[in-house]
Length: 478
Image (cartoon, rainbow, N blue to C red; front, top):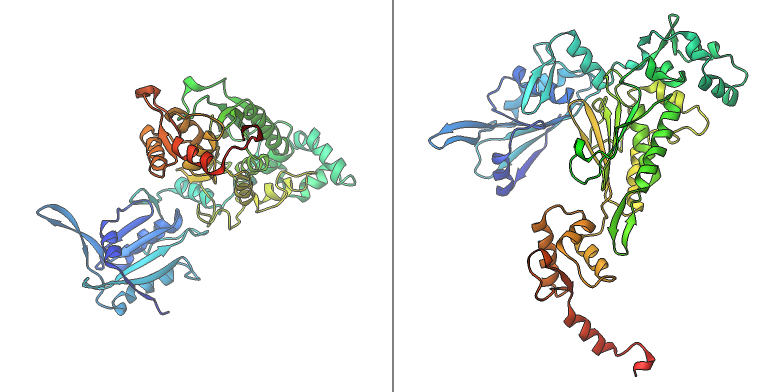
C-alpha cells in the first residue's frame, strides 16, 4: 500500500510543533517501538478516534521542554509500524496514514488518523486500552471490559432478563391495545415470544420498556425522563429551578410523546426580547421530538440514570446516558447509523404513529428543522458517560444584522438589550459589535448618555441624507 507524501508550509510546520496532546491528539517519537505505539492506536479506536504524529517529540532545554521534529529518514523506515497496524483488525480499515515533509525539517513525520471502531481493539501485548484526556488507560477486569462492550454497542442491555412476570407484560393495557390495533389475530404470549422479548421464561429489558404499563417499577432510575426548568440563561443551579424536577413515566411509546408535550407547554411560557418587544420562544417541534426520541431509544440502559431534559431561557439540553455506540462519532452522527438497542428501535416502530417514523433520520431532521426556523445548529457533545444535545434559541443572523433589525422599530439600543437579542454574553463583545457598526457609519452613540445609560441609535446623518435625496414621501408635505 503506497502512503502519500504531503509537503506542508512553514506555518503548518510551526503549528504542529505547538500542538497540545489531548483526548484526540498524541505525539510520539519515531524511535518508539511499533508494539508500544499500538497502545495509543487501540486507545483511540476504542474511544473516539484521534490523530497521532510519529516523529514529533519533546526534549529538555535550558528553557524547559521543547518540541523537536525528528522524523523517519525515509518511508521504508516506518514499515514495521504498518506491519503491526495491519494486524490489529482483519480489514485494517481503522486508520489513514500520510507522511509529512517540511522544508529544512529533519525527516518525515508519520501522521496517523485513527477511527473509532465498532469492535474492541487490543494492543500488541494483548491488553485493551481506552483514551481518557491525554492518557492511554488499560481496561482492567471483567467489569471494565463489560462496560466498554456496552459503550461500543457490542453488547446490549436490552436483552438482559428482569424479574418482571410474563403476566405483567402480556396482560398490560399497552400490549393489548397494541395488538388490537396492529395485529388483532395474534395472542400476546405468542407475539412476545416470537419477538424474543420473552427468553427462558423471563421478560427482557426491552420487553419491560415496550410492553409494561409501568416500566419504572421494574427498572427504576433508568427508564424515566426528568424535566427541569431553569429560569436563567446561565448554568443550571438549584436556585434557578422554577419547580421541583418533573418525572415523566410510562412505556417507551407514550414516554416520548408525553415528555415532548410537557416540554412544549413549558416553552410556551418563555418570552424573549425581539424587534417587536417580548415575543414567545419558538422551537421546531420536530427537532425536539427527534432529539428526545434518540435520547430514549439509543441510550445505554445499563447505566442507572434517567434521560434529562433541561429547559433554560435560551436553550434546551437533552442528556442521554451512555457514550456514542459502535463507530458513531460526533462528526459522523448525522451521516451514519448504528442502533445500540436494535430491538427497541424495531419494535417501537411497529406502533401506530411511531415516534421513530424515519429510522436513521432523527438528528438529520433536527438539524434541518432548526435551519428552517433560522436558528443555529444543535450542539452535540460526548461526556464521560453521556451524550448531550443542545438546541439553542439563537438566530442564524449576525449580531450586526440583529441590531439593525431591532433599530428599524426602536429609537435606540443599549448594551444589555443588544446582548439579549443576539445571545452574546460578554458586555465587551457586544461593544465591539456596536463599534463595527459605527465604523461602517451605521450607528452613532446617543449624545450625553454615559455609563449604564449609554445607548446607540441609527446614524442620524445617514437618515437626513436619505430624506434629502428621496424627498418627502407624504404628498401633503410637498
